[in-house]
Length: 339
Image (cartoon, rainbow, N blue to C red):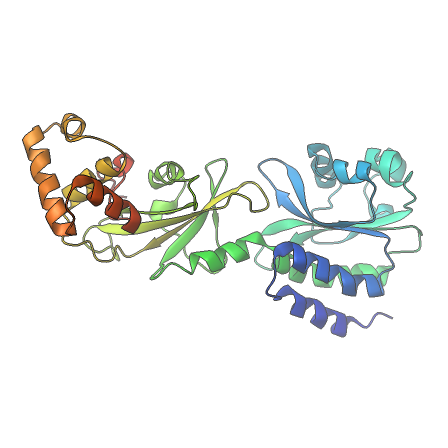
């Protein structure tokens, strides 16, 4: 009989380990190995946009199997067999005979495996994180008791390797943060655990494409202002802070966007913040005048007042300070979004 509570407590402790996702995945396999005699295992993250898995921890498989595990074919097979579900399934439990499963007959069985188990890693909040797979060289394992253990531990393992959890920590760094979301490579958004979202962070918002134009820097970080005239906005604006996710896994995560109060605007008006936005993006006084349909002299007057309010000697310094402190409205938002 498996002694479930001690192993559950150990995995729960490892889930909060101050380490990377990969390190937590590696650590969690150890207590599982002590009660389930598996010869190979993988913990993989789900990339729903590429329809692939990103391997966090993978042991005991040959190069052919490892390569297959990151393909769309593997993703589709896992999906069709129901292995992304919250209930563990062994090969003998699958809805089709093992002889009809391409990967089992062509890859796993020739490698010496005789049984296996797969379970979706789904958080208690219902967020699909990835997949846990185990394989053994004996048809006697995993046992029914082992399946019960895995089912009990799967939500905790999902919590341990959930990349959105780490991104939530990143969003909380923003002073006064009131809402946040994750922007994906397809232009969609994902909610962050425990954090509210905001109308300016929804899929239709002009803030999202404006944020994309700020990605790719070194560091991959930026701040800007967005017009917003509803509570709790101050002075008709909120601050958008973004952190790029390049290098994070899975690869469909593009950036974290956080909303916070605008902070000290140095007395700059809405029009001046928009003029600064054009300046930050490299526009000249003449081109700003054309776009806004106003005389060049009026733009020059705006820029003079901006320099005084920012206490800088020239327009270059004004542009640099505005970019560094996020004291501008990007031109993509300058038409006055009021969502």
